[in-house]
Image 1 (cartoon, rainbow over the protein chains, first blue to last red):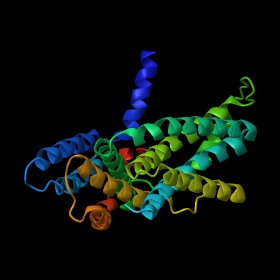
Image 2 (image 1 turned 45 degrees about the vertical axis):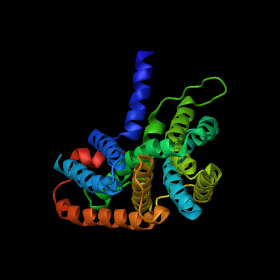
Image 3 (image 1 turned 60 degrees about the horizontal axis):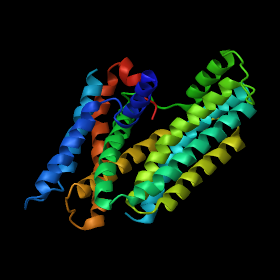
Length: 66
Length: 255
């Protein structure tokens, strides 16, 4: 039973998170930051595009380096 | 987002996954037993329909802000996965997805496996191979169709786009009786990665409370910007392609 649960969770982890868990963590941090900034007068919309502009090259660089 | 963008995004994503599923089903059918392969396809489609029927109405009941935050975040994580692989493939640092090579490998594997009857299924291997292939590829399609459809409050259109892609790919497969090797699968995956990432950014930011300048029109800037950025990364990485292919980059993942 534990094995099946582990396999089930493992499948969903691979399905959504994939090869680089740092991407998922960075997206969650960027969303939290967007929420925090949206409660102030500062425009919050540039945060996610900026995050992607950093996350994608870094993740690619790590993949190439391996 | 207008209806045509929703349709195109879901159709392309669904078509590439359907091409991959078709390769597996053809290998199971030609290599072993068509009846069992079709039973596997039918069973997987029934499970997928049950998942969509259960999750579709549940997703539309969630308040739009919360839905966009969660779904936008998931879509962005998922989209960046696709885009990362697509950029690596386009820059030559990851092996291209080759349906003919995959079909040959699958065929060799199914022909070598021993026959085994279970209940009304005359060849259990063909059944499970088709079932798993269609279910796993179909889950990605269901995820994309449901998230795009629910966010736009238009699940029926997303479902039509998904079904259209499956029908087109299935008809092409029946006509050719071979894997669809000439479909520009890698280019389609690149486009889908751009769409998933762009809509993930848009919905995720909106769900987290941000307001886009120009509202929905911001997507008209966001999609080309993500595309140009990804193409620029391909250009930069191509210089690294002269180096030997690392085993990990060559083999990782199939989506």
